[in-house]
Length: 279
Image 1 (tube, helix red, strand yellow):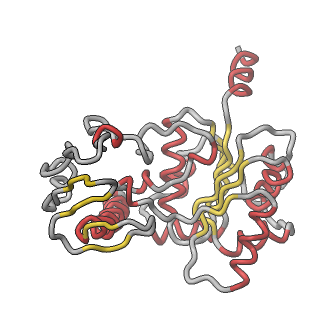
Image 2: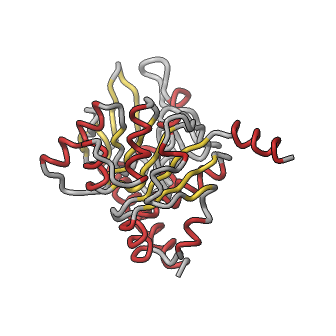
């Protein structure tokens, strides 16, 4: 029986999750929860500063945090399985990643299992995703980010994409980089269940009425008035709504761009609710 259990464990995909001392331990917690839902075996290693952040930002005890992972490795255990490249994993996610942890990884001078495991991911050409949590950045931080990127790592600060209308922390935690199918994440060009497809809403012939025009399907959720859109020869005639330029170069109703600011408030409220409910 033990042989069968060990064989099943060897076939189960693994990801190493590191938590360092930057603010935002909620990202690491949600990553562990999401990976468990995906039936991914997680190996957790937490820095000393990460444990301090847990005490400051959550009501979770040390045992509560460790219970979210399949395997927990002591920070000083540089002889652990994840310290060897022969131990197969999909890679490593550090969420959040402090600038000190970033600096150790960039220099290659690793002093703990956390940074050693990250170095292993780089040398074995596996995915290493660092959710660097620091602002503002000085030149040294940026150079370290460049160095890690040149070595094959992925710098992925916890910055939400507002076009997905994120509702919580789980919409920001980056697992796509590992090729995992996270069904709860809405992707650009893909409609959420019950919503019309973007291509269907786009009129195929110039001069025809956009089926979304004059409706409140896309704006009612945000409590915004719906501008009327009419396609005319490749351009759009819009209702008299104040305009702003998006970073894609096209006009957006002011209310539409304000939706992102409200989404950020909702995310902050979600993190605070998590902290409050776990006290």
